[in-house]
Image: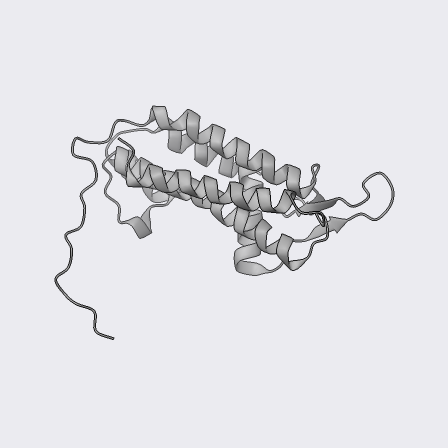
Length: 191
């Protein structure tokens, strides 16, 4: 049975894929216009959202019972340590996040830049070998990234999908009965 969290993780990957398809299907790819920037930032939001949703899967699978708003890597690690349990899935994610050269660390930093700080810096090329291509600036090194934006996004999506596919089987089966559903409220909203 697919949990609500696994379904949400999968939907975040689908949403990222939709944005990527919309970016790459345009004739104006590489323009850096509002359409592209909005789709790139939305792509990164959903991509990292898939990782965050997977953390909810970890929370449920290990019956940690952290409130949804508190499910973060450090709190999960602390709760697992208190139970004398280790999670190879959580360890793999944390390792990728701490590796400043990993695709995940780069994607997280780009997502933070676009969501919380400012525009994501980029390099545009007119003429020459890279004519019409646009590259993100690696915010961790302040250097141009090696792959252009559509390729980086495609690789990141494929890497995230593959990572989650590899990590899910390492999680314990959810407890019998699955996730408790909230009882409907009898209160009627009056606006």
